[in-house]
Image 1 (cartoon, rainbow, N blue to C red):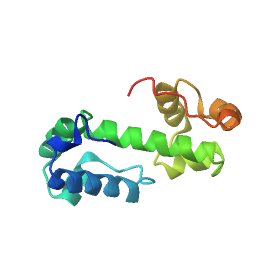
Image 2 (image 1 turned 30 degrees about the vertical axis):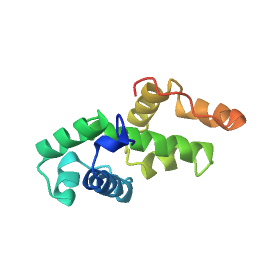
Image 3 (image 1 turned 135 degrees about the vertical axis):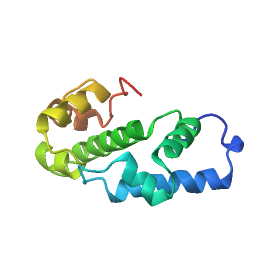
Length: 131
């Protein structure tokens, strides 16, 4: 996640905060129970304050950041052939193939299996449908 707008409008404290949030997500990426509350607890904010700060800083909600990160990670893993679709699904914190496929297709406009078959050919990840 990149901060919205000009980087100069955000303090070093904001950068540290965002890096901490992203580190919590990364370290819990395979946990299907990763929640806004877990992240808030780790960074020392209430869920509401975390939401407000992230929304202000990135224009994304906490849940959107989690799902966007998971989908980007999944797309990278598929591109790098880091396992089959089911293994990747579990690695990014999904426990339902149907849910994973729906989320992936909503984000990239293509099913994970189709991306696995075609994505590596041109080495590009399709643009997100819903950023």
